[in-house]
Amino acid sequence: MKVLVLNSGSSSIKYQLFRSDDWVAIAYGLVARIGEAEGELKLNWLDGAHNHQSRQETLPIPTHQEGIDHIVAALRASGALADVSELTAIGHRVVHGGPHFKHPVIVDDCVQAEIQSVVPLAPLHNPGHLAGIEVARRLFPSVPSVVVFDTAFHQTMPPAAYRYAIPEFLYTEHRIRRYGFHGTSHGYVASRAARVLGKPLEQCNLITLHLGNGASAAAIRGGQCIDTSMGLTPLEGLVMGTRCGDIDPAVLIYLGKNLGLDAEAQDQLLNRQSGLLGICGVNDMREIEQLAVEGNARAELAIGITAHRLKKYIGAYYAELGRVDAIIFTGGIGENSVGIRRRACAGLERLGIVLDEEANASRESRGERCISVADGEVRVLVIPTNEELEIARQALAAVGG
Ligand code: AMP
Image 1: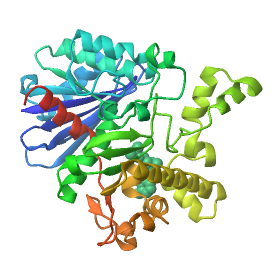
Image 2 (image 1 turned 135 degrees about the horizontal axis):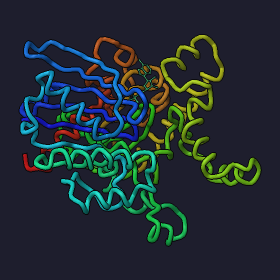
Image 3 (image 1 turned 90 degrees about the horizontal axis):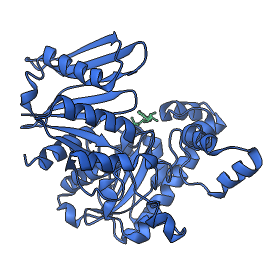
């Protein structure tokens, strides 16, 4: 049997098809530029002889319905999916689940309405997810659609971590609290780390650092999240590609009063023009590291602020957890940037965090690996994330597979 994972955005749908007996990804790809004059369909798949094949097409994709139709037709034509009846479940990534969803759920009308009700909290993400969910349910009524929320893993946070120090009615009437995101990734690397440590997850205290274009940290006690760096939206916390992360909220008041920026302009500024891009004009960490090597002071500052903020979170979460078994780096930057890992951990030897410089710099392994010294009190691990696989597994578990 097979599980299809859909990550449906406002104008694109990423997909991955897994064989559920061995969790091999037998096909993946995307449809992009939905609604534009020319859309794009990409498919990569493993053929019968286990060779990688790929195909790319430019064609109009007016709506999400056509997008999903094209995906299924392409999967069928490639032989990756003989028939929709092979699907045990369709797993949908949903960024914001609001305060109620603690686990993946099979979608029904109530679930869909609840996701709709938190659109104001995730206006960039949830409408696109809903479009994909609605079409999948309509086209494939016999295949259960399961939603897996980025927020769910963080639902174990205590009120002291998830409440803001603002008037009570904003929480009770407007649901303004900290939710946290990237939960599927934090949960996945935490469970992989437990395997590497050779301990049940329930006995592991971990600090997980998901460092990609979006970035967040989580403090995990006994396998459960007790704090995370993102808040009401994915803007709070670490420095990101184009997002500012933590900032004095008075900056917004200042921008409104003195620069006349309205809410829309403030949103653009802090979500799309800040972070690495705002500091040095580039949001790709590979390029920034190269520029820094060439002596570009703004690129060096962008790296400096990123590492400084990361170290602050490691220290804060260490204090919250009391004892830490491992720190886990994941995401494009966490998995690949030797320099960011080195700078985030530098000077933390008194906390038992000591990198093995050679292991950290080694390019030999791209897989799960330990980069701390053998006798280090805290293991430092690099664990490639795999959110799609985790969504597929959770979707199958939700339908009782
Ligand atoms: P993600 O959102 O997880 O795909 O991560 C994207 C980020 O990872 C971008 O800032 C990339 O520049 C960064 N990245 C990917 N590969 C490397 C690398 N080899 N060294 C440094 N940063 C990298």
